[in-house]
Image: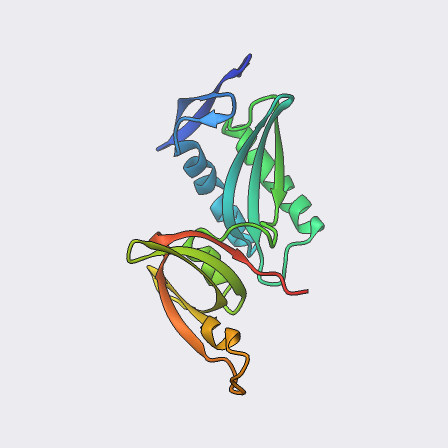
Length: 193
């Protein structure tokens, strides 16, 4: 139900529809995102698709609920249409889409920030730019994701000092750095053209 810039939606907790309030597109609880995730996850798993994120975007003409998905062989436009066709009735039955909301299914895109453990796992082997906190100092590095543990990312970084030493005929050396995911301020795939 939409009431001007104030809307009333519902979340599902143990099969009970509970009210959820949002104001100008800002949802006051993470519960709506969690409810949508728990409803769509089983459907996505049967389609061999991974849920990346649930996003809400507010605009003056309406609001958008966006489901971001990933497939190992890539996400096509047809995949998005098919998934949307399956998920939209589920969200409608549970009254999780207000009348003025639009609904989209999309891939995360290459320019999306890497935030979660799964984001780093999906991009293992990729070249990334990462800003992180190291002993209370902010650092920035560019390197390849070598491996991921439950709490950290191992990144192979080219030695910047070796790059600057033009007199040295030696190849630049790479070093491995381990960065706690909790210490990462921002990370993004580096596109190589």
